Structures are given as structure tokens and as C-alpha cells.
Image 1 (cartoon, rainbow, N blue to C red):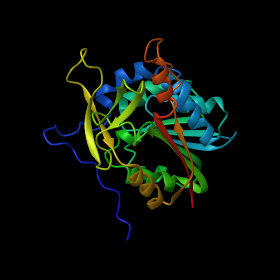
Image 2: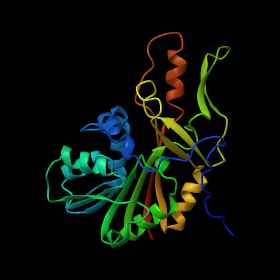
Image 3: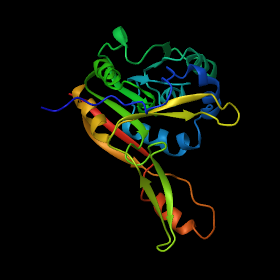
Image 4: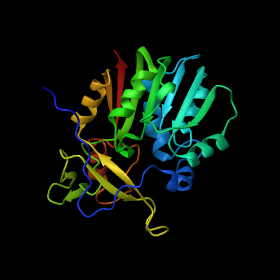
Amino acid sequence: MRQPPRKPRTPRGTAPPTRGWDHVAAWYDRLVGDEGSDYHRHVILPAAMRMLDPQPGERVLDVCCGQGVLSRLLLERNVGFVLAVDASPRLIAAAKARGPRDARVRYVVRDARRLDHLADGTFDAAALIMAVQDLEELEPVLQGMARALRTGGRAVLVMMHPCFRVPRQSEWGWDESKRTQYRRIDRYATPMSVPIATHPGAAPGQQTFFYHRPLADIISALGAAGLAVAACEELLTHRQSQPGGHSRGENRAAREFPVFLALKSVKL
């Protein structure tokens, strides 16, 4: 019998996680801005839109919408309606403030684990963009997304790549003899939560938590929710190394080790 996905473990000696992102909403809103951060604009949002493939008139659910960067892009594609939910009242307020004022979008403060009547089975597509690693509990979120979708509806997840991007457990290294940059992975298979300083120096005590899960746990959670994985993209950085003695090896490594993972699934 397949075992259920494991709950991430908080490393010994760390404080209990701070719930939600309300306490860092102002920082996050400045980081993302109207059109997204550098990575949003060049990598994350293009992949999300390719996989969502939103069509005019469709209903789309934007889960953990943050300050609404994806929702605004969906409106530009002439979808029929966007329901955008986030647990942070400050991020929802930022999404409304950034606009546009449009009857086709509704922003709601809601815990993504408890979509309740909002998950009414009428949505053509649902998105969870750069939030998998922010969720202590993933399974109820995916189950709510599945309930929100019509049969055949699609759900798209974009996340930090769980195989190569584990905070404090992965890093770049340089092999001088081979003139090669490599990716070192110290831990992967164990679910864990890792405290992340949002902007060290400016506010050293302000942090969020990164919830790492191995890829098998994420795919199994999708399957348990009735969402069948139909496509996968491993997203590479668009950035180039600065000219120098290591630039050739660094650029080669950048073409080999993905930064983000995008999954498209379909409701059975």
C-alpha cells in the first residue's frame, strides 16, 4: 500500500513556524511589483501561462495569489473570471490596490487549506505558483483545488525545484581540476522546514519558512487529490555569469541544473 506523503519536519533547535506571510507582506509586494520579479517575468510566469493555456471566457482559481501578479496577467488574456485567494489580508489588500478594478476578478482572504464553498467544481483551471514550498500542509490545498475544478480541468504548480534547491542543504561548488561548477546536495529525501530570513541586515529577525518535500511526496499528493500529472517542465535560469575565469563552467552548470519545477495535472 502506498504510504501518504510525509509531513515536513522542523529541524531541531528552530522556533515554531510563523503562520502565513502577512508579517512580510510589504517586503514581498515590493519584491514582486506590478509585473513580477526578474525570475517571475523571465521564467516563472511564462511557464505558468504555457501550462495553464488560459482561454477567453474560462474560470481560473489562483491559489496563494499573493499580491495578484498572476491574476493580473490572466485578465490580460481575457479569461472570464479569476478567483484569487490568499491567507494574508495585507497581500490581498496589495492585490486590490495594484488593480486593475475589474469585475472579472475577485480577491478573497482565505486559508488555502479550507476553500470550502469556493471549491464548487466550476473552474476550468487552477494555479499554485511559487507557494508549494511555503505550505506546511500541501495535501488539503491540492484537494481543495481538485474540488474546485470541473472534470478535465487543469491544475498547474510552479515551485522551487525540490531536487536541487533545498535551503541550507544545497549549494554551488567549484572543481578547479575540471574547471566545472557542480551542485552539492547534502539532504533531499527527508521532508523538513527551514527558516529563511526575508532580508537579513535590514530586519534580521524577520523570517518565513521553506517546507521541503521530495518530489515523490508532491506527485503522490497530486494523485491522492485525483489530479493526474500530464506534463512537467524543469525550468532553468535565464541569467548569465559575469565574464571571468569561472564564467564558462558557471554558464554550463546553469544549463544543466534547473531552478524551478512546473507540473501540469488534470482532474480525473
